[in-house]
Image (tube, rainbow, N blue to C red; front, side, top):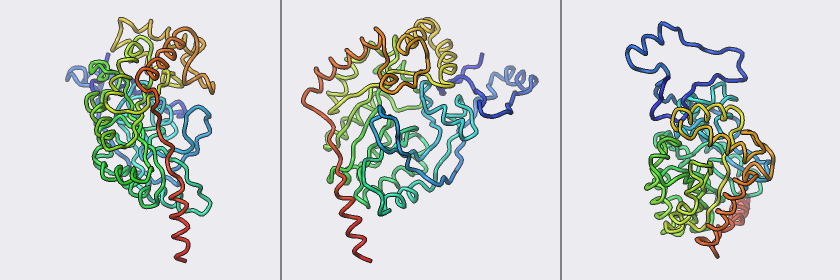
Length: 354
């Protein structure tokens, strides 16, 4: 059994859309075993790509956003439960180790963004960065694509939301402060656990919990609105931490908290089951049964209105605990509605130049 320390997925699943698959030769596997190394323990590879569009319209009624954009495809954070793993197959890669070691870098993101929001037909509304993969994952430290996009949002006075679990967002505090002066920015920090041991297993390459809470604190001290996402809630792994996580988020300065229930669509169910059998064998079967109990006996759940919150007794207990946490720590607080008017005025001013 190969253990891929430092990675979330422990399997390199083949792409289900591909008729061809790669199986390593037995003599090479024997060599790796003798040398005590894994043939799949490979460094992250970044591939520059140039898509034709970058803004995605969200049609799901229960996601809470209208448009999203993702400067990167694939995510080195390696969160084993991540729903975005399935989307990697559309790029010709597998949802397992490929997802976190083969990263597509969308080099023309800021140009595509600028072209889109300059159009006469574009009506300003919040565009959320990281609807699929984290815009502040490790690649951003080198490529700075997220920063270049924030410069475009600031230039055109356009509202933007950010979802991340990386403290790297603090690098761009200058842009965030400028955006916030005109009510153009909202930040959503994802916190899944307060246990570093659990975090290292679930999300091996993410920022530590201490760094994330400090990020909430620093942003909040500057008046930048921060929502903390307790996501996903996984029965018998982090479900007992809900109140403690909400309290920590509130004390750090967050003004709201949200959550989603774990759901293991597509290939994620197989990846997660393999992972938990290796990482948490003592509770593997219990956790899997409880996840199924939250989704009508299935790991998959694509039902609008149900998939994010789940159903059944376990889901009800979790949702009730979230309600208690909101009443206890966030009464009278809510995230602001971002400003869309300045972008319209800015476009009109520019049109008058012609």
